[in-house]
Amino acid sequence: ATRDVLTIVWTLVAVEALRVLLVFVYLARQEMFIGGLQWSGVVEQLRFAAPIGISAFMQSAGRNIGKIFISSTLGSVALAYYATGSYLLPIIRVMRSGITDAIYPELVRAHNQPGAAVRLWQRVNVLNCVMFFPAFVLIVHYAEQIIATLFTSAYLPAVPMFNVFACF
Image (cartoon, rainbow, N blue to C red; front, side, top):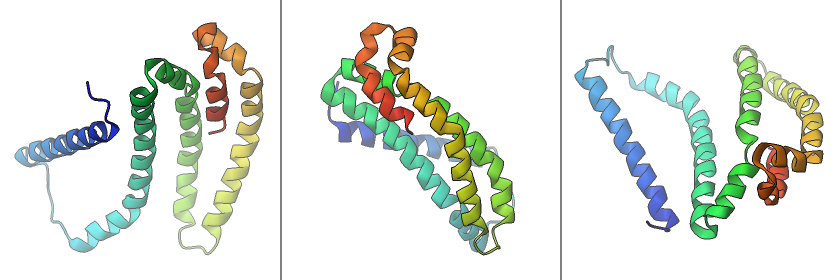
């Protein structure tokens, strides 16, 4: 087993590239690509999708690279504490994505209105603060009890990481 983080990361990149290539070949053989391809349409789609795609890629890469780095440099016990401490992240992501999905229609309507997107962003931030800050305070205050109840007291060293991740 290799412990070189870059080797693992580039292997993951190669596997994903191979997966995309296989899907492309399959779709081409099934003749699922229909219609004409116009360069202006591709550019328009990339202009819209590229920032969102890059952001999603960086989030996913950050999560996975963090786990790989921790396990390869600090060992399996540290990875267990990291996994326990980051237990809330998927729950928080689901809650935030619900808010994000709810505002997309408004964001699309505000596309051509000067300053509308900024006002919407401000309202969403206020909503996030009103919803999440009280929950974060409770989670941080009761972190030891939460960890001990969900994972046993053997994982109490994960409490500081749990508190840090509660803020995300």
